[in-house]
Length: 151
Ligand code: SF4
Ligand code: SF4
Image (tube, rainbow, N blue to C red; front, side, top):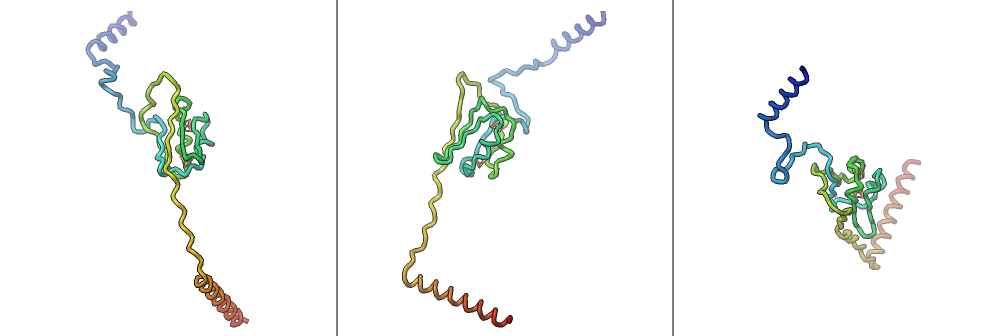
């Protein structure tokens, strides 16, 4: 009898309350701020060190330093956040949204910008070489004078 009363109460409660399900996709679920969704990279800050690849327990990340690409197997990722916590440049974060459902396995690849050009070395003219030699000789003489003073 007690269970029938409990059941009836539950039925009445559900009859007069809002449904717990959402009208998806018209109404999307709001994820809590600290949800672990999908890993995102700020590729402009990435130095292609490969730390995230080495720390990923499911080998979902591939970093190609030569091609300057960062790839992730979305369906291999277990949202552990290990890569995010070990990135030395702090350029990874967990987006709160989960990866969109797909029929096939998805690997997202992000192309990094080309490397910054190396600063050009100043041209060594005979005058510049003479200037450098004079500066080195002056430095050596100053050091010898200081040592002589201390003796
Ligand atoms: S750990 Fe960070 S900086 Fe290093 S390759 Fe991964 S995303 Fe780039
Ligand atoms: S969250 Fe975990 S499983 Fe997903 S890519 Fe990062 S380290 Fe790998």
